[in-house]
Amino acid sequence: GDSVTQMEGPVTLSEEAFLTINCTYTATGYPSLFWYVQYPGEGLQLLLKATKADDKGSNKGFEATYRKETTSFHLEKGSVQVSDSAVYFCALSDAGGSQGNLIFGKGTKLSVKP
Amino acid sequence: ETGVTQSPTHLIKTRGQQVTLRCSSQSGHNTVSWYQQALGQGPQFIFQYYREEENGRGNFPPRFSGLQFPNYSSELNVNALELDDSALYLCASTDARNRDADTQYFGPGTRLTVL
Image (cartoon, rainbow over all chains, first blue to last red):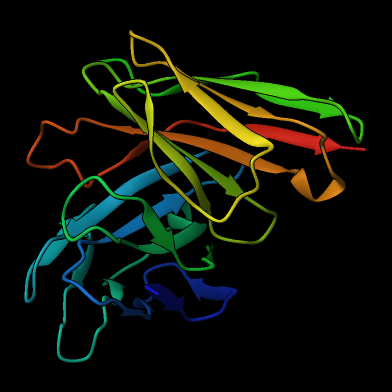
């Protein structure tokens, strides 16, 4: 079945460092891809999405590009802030673009030190 | 625009009891999905409701059941609680009529502890 694999954390960075969180997926169709963020004690917030190959999702300085050839959707940010400390989840929609359920990776915890 | 809300925030039950969790979908959204997030893990899909009927189910036993009401709000019921049911339960909503229907918006969750 469809699945998502994320790099394991935790990831600890200094403020203004460059961030990459790797995400690869396995899917039989053409899923939409997502990054969600979860701050301590809260639910999930949509960070960005991409719906087809070569699409780039971006939000709040974060970017990720849908790479079909490498089945990847790596999250990047050029300069992280302490406020970016959270758990980041990569996910795919398993119904080829409809409102099917989301399949999540295990999450990557990011800690940014001042 | 009102986001997804869930109640209660926290809940403590004992093994064998039954629990009901509630969710109000985001304004204008007609589809609700429920997820279970164990500590340190990603959310796992339980089921989805659309037009008051179950519209897909993950790998969860029948003691996990749900309802959707005409105003699109939803309930998750869990019978015969087990220790492993301790988790954060997340509700998410979307509008199936929307071109963006595969994007789900999450509530803050209900933290269930089973003793």
